[in-house]
Length: 131
Image (cartoon, rainbow, N blue to C red; front, side, top):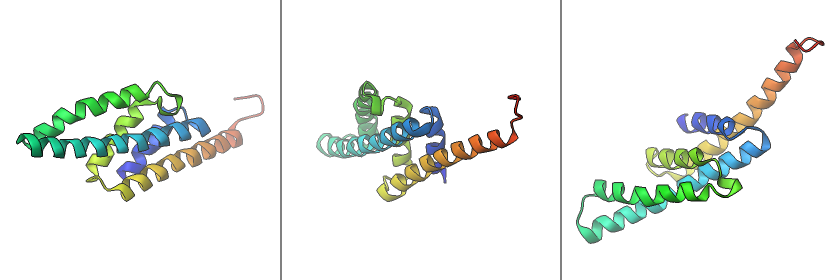
């Protein structure tokens, strides 16, 4: 579904290959974790302050989004857009851990498989002189 396709795109945007697979999947998963903590914090803020859940979510999304940017300083999590994809799709799936975790794994695996298949297709259709 949607998560798999977005993860597939994330794999290529992170550079593809083994490195892209590792970075994409790690940062997608980290985005899910930050989304979970943002939701917990929003629930807490709404309950102690009396503001609506909507405004509590708006307020708490900002610092957790900043954390996604901050973690980009580390190689494993350096594909910052992948963290936001993880946050977005975790929220969009109703914070369903199983669906989101498996969707990201499947999509990144499809990326590896399609990259390999594309390389083999290119080799099979390339003439010996390189054209």
